[in-house]
Amino acid sequence: MSIALRRTLKILHTLASCGMVGALAGALVLLNFAPQDTPAAYVDMRQAVAALSDYVLLPSLATVIVSGLLAMAVHVPYLNKGWVLAKAALGIVVFKGGLHVVGAHSAYADRLLGEVAAGAELPPEALMGALPYEAAALWGMLALAVVNIVLGVWRPKFIRDRASATRSKRPATRHPEKTVSQAAE
View 1: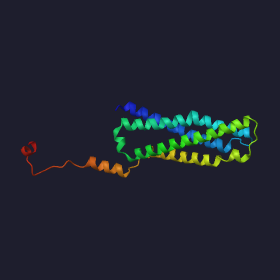
View 2: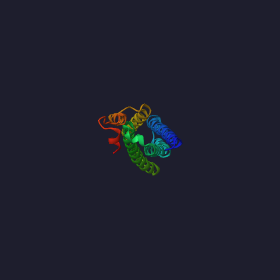
View 3: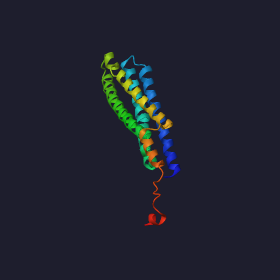
View 4: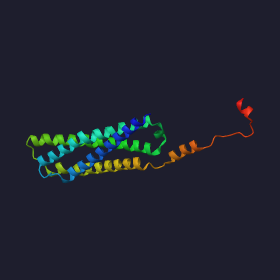
């Protein structure tokens, strides 16, 4: 395929990876340092995390997955590289985690927002109960995203890579006992 298309996909993939890591880090900062001492402040923090997820994290995740899969499709040698397949598998795990974290916790925040708007007093454990689990999930996603970036930069040789390289470097088998006229037959 054209070099311009491959480079465009690589740029999109890299920029989206930056957006994904930034959104994950931003969500972690909000969860750990945004004011959460009152129900209204907690709901504001949840809305900020939801906005970051909706407008940066999910579009970045989708762009990373689509651009990575398209890069594999337009550059066929990628299909024989172990690091590419590892990135694809990890990318799908990160995408699934992103959908789970964003979906579950934004529904929880919406429910709390409705209760606070109705004038309900919420106990602190209702506000803080899900934060450690959400932070752990975000840290896991962030770690996997960084591993994906490292794989894309480092491009280690896996067993599958060596096997395909060995096949392609093997000299053609020659039959010295055959003459030129016998080989033509």
